[in-house]
Image 1 (cartoon, rainbow, N blue to C red):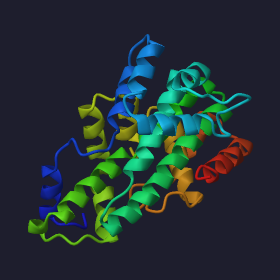
Image 2: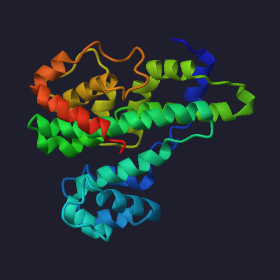
Image 3: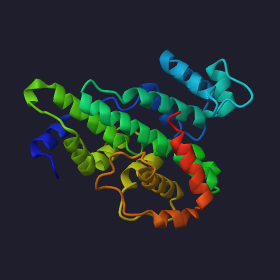
Amino acid sequence: MGFSLDLRYQICLQPIELPVFNPVALELLQLLANAEVDINDVIEIINKDQALTVQILRMANSSAYAGRYKSETIKESVNRLGVSQITNLAMAASQASLHTSHVPVVDEVMQHLWIHSHACAVGCRSLAIGTGHRHLADQAYLAGLLHDVGKLYLLKALEQISLNKENKCELDQETLLDVFSDMHVEQGFRIMYHWDIPSVYCNIVANHHADSFNHSDILLAIVRLVNFQSRLYDLNTYPRFIQPDDALKEADVLSVTEAVLARMETDMRGSGE
């Protein structure tokens, strides 16, 4: 551990309610846990946040999702894309806006974290489809997007600590990365559990760096492999000491081909366009 016990203590004192989820996107995500979702409920929830509504429509009408017709309303978008995909768009749009800080060193790392998280979301969706698990594509996207939410929480906590003059805390990049390595998995799981996020995503956060994994858990294998590959594609700027040495088991479980990896790489590199 390369940071002081006092800093760890200060992090643990930070409120769990630090903004790592947009309330509307969070409500949509929690709604997905229900067996039957009423589309009208989804539309009503989205319309609570006008700015988010605009962003969802923009993304739904982008080249990746528009198809032959563009949507003029959220109702049209939900009917065309479905609840799961609209929830993914809502979460992506809202998460992007949360990766900013008034503290320069924190803001820089946040920008890189967003590039990594969104690239992993796109890569997980691509890998799920490419390996014959299309039914998991929407879940895979969200799992990739949220797997490092513990890092976002820690950055928000460190920002608050830095802005409090009583703490006399000067942050540098090395300290941020040491905190990530030591705390992001446990804090990520804590956040997911607190906000009652569906257990499938809690499992991803808790185990994406575990030494071993359940080989029948296809979704976890997808996230672990994509997370590993992101470093090879220069889309994981700060892997530090927490990245597994290889992802051979994950590749074997998924029966990944070179063609699938090539497609995934292209999709991940294009995720910022």
